[in-house]
Image 1: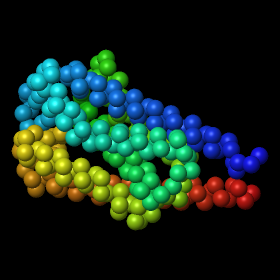
Image 2 (image 1 turned 90 degrees about the vertical axis):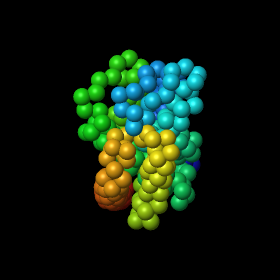
Image 3 (image 1 turned 120 degrees about the vertical axis):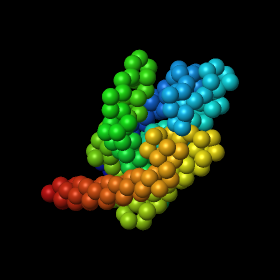
Image 4 (image 1 turned 180 degrees about the vertical axis):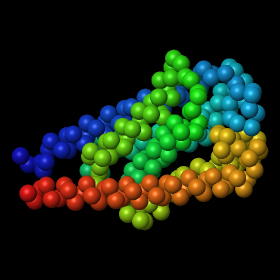
Length: 235
């Protein structure tokens, strides 16, 4: 056979495709629910996003709120990266390596923060249950599993980790700037209006440190898997 290790390449392509499909389903369902006004305006917490009128009058506000959520950004990055890898599993570049790491770090942070902090005691029903489940549980778990199984390997180093922080920090800056303009923030833990700027910046700093530690752990796991793979091939 002319292609090297065709079964592994076929497996990688299939897993990348499944990961992309699940992520896109979550993103598109969430987009549809927000655009249609499925969620009622949140008038109980005026300093948190969701205070848009129902109907066409609130459409622009709902969509601007939607793209401001870290959950959406992380799921979109996963969907794009996995689609690119599905279309060409051998795709490799510095930007691709950074985005692949971003897809892992950001989706893990999304899953952990929601399930440990934001989602505790919150119930979801119907399409809301499906949307939140896809974005906060299924896609995070699936993305990590796919990376563990098919990688790509050898893409994580200290420079890639540093560059991977640009997108999350840019999101934080955008969320805080937009919040200062409109007086509402995507999450309670970045709600400067009620918690104060110092508290919010301290929380963001903690998340950045956790993200760096997570990236270093992923780099270590990647190195171990790569070493075991090379040992298996030699034997």
